Length: 158
Image (cartoon, rainbow, N blue to C red; front, side, top):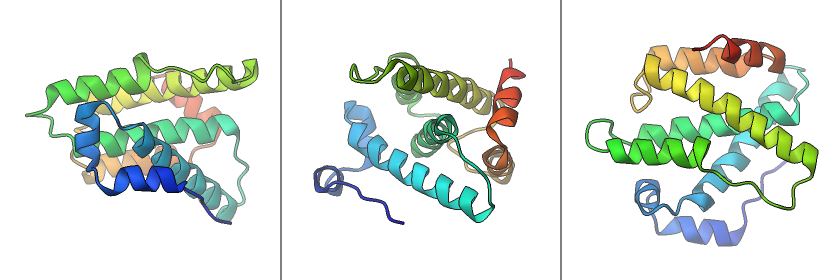
């Protein structure tokens, strides 16, 4: 098994720091790469543990991974506007490909909704830019849950 990242995406990322891309609003390629890596790692981890994976789970995890990684790059004290921009871009003002089927669109919308709710909970409870032990424990615990338990947990958040 392998992960392919197109040469165009790699070329775009070679000369740009992710934080600069965030500030310029041009971090789609970075997120595309992050999503691919997230999917790959999620499939491998679950296969190693003999667990089935759904497409919704993969998309949900990728959205969470994007938020946590990008958020960890932002300094909460000096870049409040960057944080708000990131939250809006990932969870509120995002667009979906018009070529998606109805079921694909619904899956992406669900993943986005649940990831947004989970990440806002992380934002309130932890300092996501500071990948401390408590936050990492929470992320690991959530990562290991099956889809039904993830959705149940998220629905219990405020």
